[in-house]
Length: 541
Image 1 (cartoon, rainbow, N blue to C red):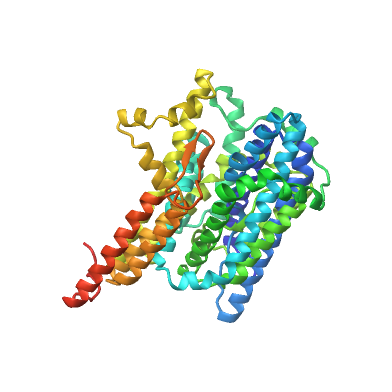
Image 2: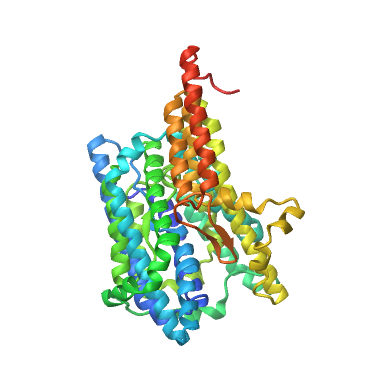
């Protein structure tokens, strides 16, 4: 498969997405965790880039093999990169508490930051093992789960954590970001080719970057680029080969803090990575490209193991967005280009220079468009009668996004008030929320384990539409088991984000409710058979 114009667009979009992860690592690990720049440049980013390169090259090869077997020239490689959800979870729910605990025990800030990094390596390693363990049963889960359930979760994530966020940021910087969005809408909605055969994604990036730099001539414009930052960014250029850090990884694995975080944070994140991979594979199949589940998940796990062994705390995985990249015209080459690009960026210390030259606002229209396509796919690629099941599956992800916005708003209020404890004190008082009409407990319960909640309810709904009552009851029983052990609904939220309460009986009330629903669905199925109401329900109008 040769390089095509769509590969260039796909590369720009996937590169911007991965670049955002690199910028988050630089900003959060440096600012929140106190990691020294040398640790980030010499260990974390090269390790992350090597794991990204490994996965991208594998998925490009897999796409070429599928194209050869099928005789098609429209096969798109699976996108691959750092898992965003795990990135935030490991920083705020694993490494930051480890750092604070070390400092409380008398460690210096430098010692505490290093321990946080070592515990983060252990978290990444354990997450990889969970994905490797889930690989053998991946195909079985896909066969027994309605497509509507698998795609509904992705659409919820796409519309809440991708599309809405970038839409907000687009209208925050209209003079930079709105024209690139219009370029993409013209290119991909109307199909009109722009001058000089330059792909739409490249036009969007060029115009957005140009606008950002032109606005430096008008200081009041609030442009995101800063010419004064360029010299310092280019000073970091050098050669940073990845080096194994197995002794640091072993320290993290054997530290008591890692055991403290294993059940409440690392285990749920690992399970969600497994589920997310399955959903992305189903999304690719719905778009026309069927890839084997087990090898793909094994590569995800191996990529995360490589990352942890070389110094990155962040698992890599199949990315959300395959149908979007396919609609762009991307094939196999965009994946290889992305992997090679980030290997060069990290090994040469160019991350800060690239981020200083190209603002995120210039390329985020591509990611916004991807979110739109994924949301649309959930409705188009499933039977039309299952559309209500897809719509129902959007609610848990939107609730999770609402919790995120809520904690961000309360943290901002604490900064303004000069009271760091304001957010936690407010969140500890649900009655205050009820007084304003907000149901905090319900919002948190719906958001906890939202990917699993979406799967259970969308699957049951799709099966009920087809009047398959016993399998629908079976999914409710699965929901009861997951709730009982705290993987859904149970837990709490703090200024640092939501945390799980994983223990037998943690979510007993929700487990009892799911059990009651399962019994009701089973009895209804018996009634339907007795009264000969077993044919699938007609499409909803």
